[in-house]
Amino acid sequence: MRLRLDASTHLLVLTGAGVSAESGIPTFRAGGGLWENHPIERVASPQGFREDPELVWRFYSDRRRQARDVQPNPGHLAVAAIEERLGDRFLLVTQNIDGLHRRAGSHRMVEIHGSLFETRCAHCDRPSFADDKVYYGADVPACDACERKGRKGLLRPNIVWFGEMLDPDHMRRIEVFMESSARARFVFLAIGTSGVVYPAAGLVLHARAAGAETWLVNADPPENRSAFQHFVQGPSGKVLPELVEWA
Ligand code: BJW
Image (cartoon, helix red, strand yellow):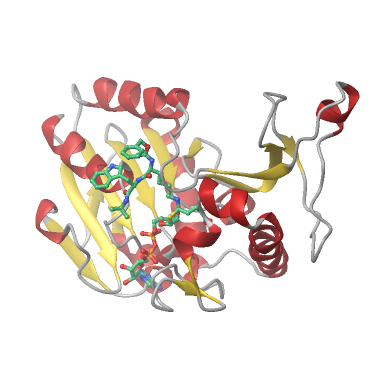
């Protein structure tokens, strides 16, 4: 089955952990949702950070190191090549924080769950900043902006954890893209995501309401499979380079 695109198609792509699996980054739910026997919610939630910031920094330090050491795969490259053809009629929404889409050449992109290579303060509203350091053990980084005001603030990864709000500007950008696409031929394509984490899992329904044709590329049928009209089962690194047929 091939996805036919032409120069007037608007395409919204949503990616999840599956697209980076062939680069060697394990998906979230592959290991039963555990990291070193800790449930993901414990290492990816504000409560988990309050209880044990060292553990959380160790988890994200491991992931920084891992993401730095791997390369984008043919799936990431195929997504970037489609953007090259469609220009502003394309938007990539990624749940991944590993930076591999950017390294593959994607630009029109919203990283809705944040970035592994940015840090911010858990206590003050200083802007997030680029950071690829790894922190271990008792080495939990402190916020120097807080320190200057005589306060004690801890730095945290700039990631959207469970129970936290997504950036309203990101959601608005997706909404604006959908609104402008509703007047054209509009295709929504989800890749490598289990369809369980909201609001990302609900985007397919918004896209359908805006008149989109809905496509899914995934290794297994995900939770929200029934929301998609077309399902191509297989690894994205193999499927994506062959998926699109240009009219
Ligand atoms: C391949 C492949 C290959 C493998 N090729 N495919 C509505 C209903 C119920 C609950 C909620 C709701 N709205 C909000 C909530 C609460 C919550 C939520 O969704 N909970 C659910 C678990 C039930 N959502 C939130 O808290 C969000 N905030 C929010 O909505 O704020 C408002 C609000 C707050 C509180 C209550 C209500 C509203 C924030 C969500 C942030 C998620 N953050 C995480 C962790 C941080 C990032 C990190 O550390 O990396 O993001 S969770 C984790 O899951 C991570 C991922 O981005 C995300 C999605 O996972 P993904 O990408 O789908 O990966 P997997 O592993 O699940 O699936 C991989 C898939 O690929 C599989 O299907 C494989 O088969 C496939 N695959 N190899 C193709 N080679």
